[in-house]
Length: 296
Image (tube, rainbow, N blue to C red):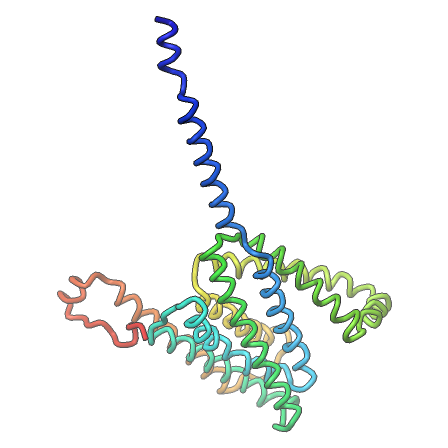
């Protein structure tokens, strides 16, 4: 009886071996699915380096307000690139919200230009700076949509993506400043003459890391359009805080830009709210689906 009981509770060696092999194969498949090719991170790093290089180099040709005006169109470019990279379909209301945000920020920045002495006159220098900024916008749009695609297909974490992207990006930048532009020794000399810049660089790195992690975590649960709107709104908040830190006149362009941006965004949010109601409630209340909420 004890022998039969022992045999009845002991697993079949063939079944156990097969189960173990199946489990091992499944785990290998899951690990292969979760592993992101290093080439993807290298491409992401390259897009960030291109965006950073074009953005910083453009300031040699255009002023900061002009840069803000041109880069405010990034939201629309993100949407267009997202249609091809991640097959994202946006509704008309989302396009309206993107354009309104871009228009409001542009008007707000034009108010800064009207009271500033640094006004760009169109010429070859302004054209070169604008082309650099357009290249930076395209690189950023490709990066954010490619990051979303990686999150969807490979289940990468924001920490992992930040680690590899920053690591490859730092290696690329080191080669650029040490070999191509020969700016490494000049930068080291400048840091030696101004020790306080070490503190600024440390704070810049800490706050920059916090911003990157916030954007990546937000991108993991939302879409590139929402991230682009948040980043664009951050620029508007930066311009608004400049009135507190550096007092200057408040013009009609500033006021109209704020009202245009907030009012149109509120209308779009209300439109999306109405469309989120069940169809039977909308029919009983006599509410028709707005055209702006239909996908294009």
